[in-house]
Length: 152
Ligand SMILES: [Cu+2]
Image (cartoon, rainbow, N blue to C red; front, side, top):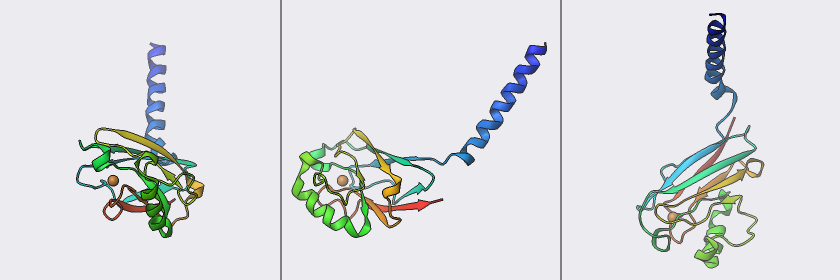
């Protein structure tokens, strides 16, 4: 009987701490989907400054192969987007449409096709507060882009 009572208390304490967890720890990841209609399902990625690393999980929910409708997520300062896109196209699909060693690129995933996924860890201290994410597949950046916001 005494044991039963104790267990009840422990369970109650566990439930309490679990409930308060979201307030204490910021979400340091996001799931993003890209589709065959050349779209991301979000226009904004909010990154908490309290995260050291922020993980982006990209999923291609379409069916088209990556040669036709490949997608990636590339993060740069907004001013660097166009230059990174241009150099990425020159780099080609084998390089995920990102110039090798491009220092303007804060983070990027692989190029993936329908049904595939990839993740990338973004170093939060490299974000400037005026950053964008986009797909660097040729021609996709005009539709597939959004802002990366730093939030508290
Ligand atoms: Cu794309």
